[in-house]
Image 1: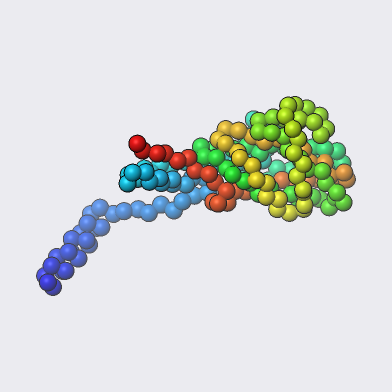
Image 2: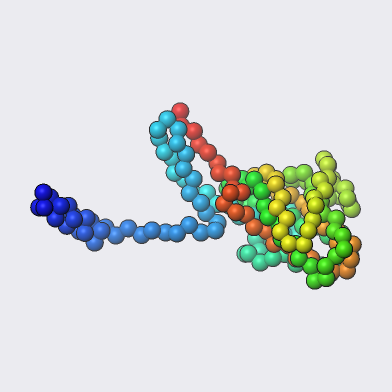
Length: 178
């Protein structure tokens, strides 16, 4: 029995010496998705890239916050998902150079921009209760899509918009084997 344990331990040491394994930690832009159907497990890699930008086709700012103009008028920004998985909710952090007394905050339907103040090009406008700080907005944001937002601080100030997504807000794509 001792010989079997020593042999097995020697085998494990040799296996890890000659065939080292590298464990790669998950990063903020990728997640492994596993599904189990009929006893088979499928593993795939997907990405989520969600950010605030000043246009519906704006590029990823690489983690920097979006700083809007110093204005007392309504300003517009977009939350884009250029990843490969859907997002069920986003956390939008609003901060201001001077705190407004009241802020009007709203969004249009998926993929629809604002045509003018308080008016979406099509569909309906959804009013959001805005606070200074984190505003968690529940919305389904599929890959390669955007939501348009209107922020009217009613006071001369410079708004800053940051977006984050927690792991519980990611809706992975599932695969079913038949």
